[in-house]
Length: 296
Ligand code: G3P
Ligand code: CA
Image (cartoon, rainbow, N blue to C red; front, side, top):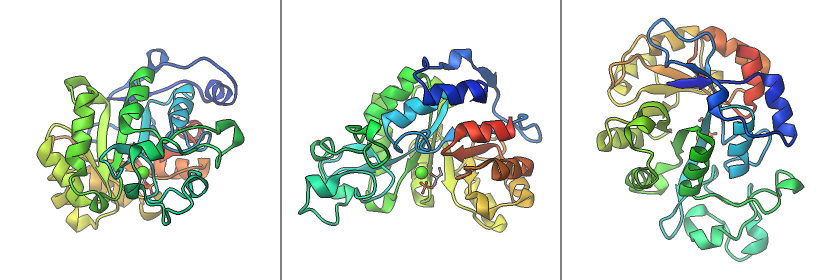
């Protein structure tokens, strides 16, 4: 099930002000789209959290999405040297933390070379804005806990799976420990996606009940093979048109429902309207309020 939400004007005020948290109880419920009956508006997914308004992949970005009334949050999961799952986009730490200052002798500052305790010392907010100084890199467990508190949903990306052999099992273990593999989470609140087809296949094999997504734009002729293990084909918006979306949606996925298309990363109203007209099921964006205004 997908959830659509509060008015954009309320939401924008909440993001920039100190407004109270908007919980999904106050939102409009919509059912997951089936063949030929997509809901009037696509699902809006906050990319790395509402990362236009707060530092990406942090708890602040999760909360910014919640204040906008956005349920679905995308993130990127990697693994530390000592095996802890953390939420970071880049495989290096330079762009989004002060790692060069804290660990000057540890070039090239790859995520995989640092322990969780070392990552916990980093500032992952100042690069985005001084008011986010002291924001930390969250572990996946912390991220899940915050989503749960906010009653949000997760589009989890396995980032660079080739760098982290076995990360699929690790992710499933943390999800299970946090209660995210129970029936209600699996049915309504969790999708696992990756650019790595083998990684998506592995998740599907390990937990066939979990909804999966493949990131990319496979040729139309190859789509039936993808439909064996993925429920979503999630392409860059720059690579698709109405014909491609229809070709995906004509197929049924491993759970007997038609394949969905969730496209990324659409950050302006004109492109949001354009992909909405293509009939996409979801739009992944740094600015969920902008996309909701353009498509709602
Ligand atoms: O969820 C889609 C999108 O996140 C894929 O690209 O590089 O932002 O992880 P990237
Ligand atoms: Ca991502």
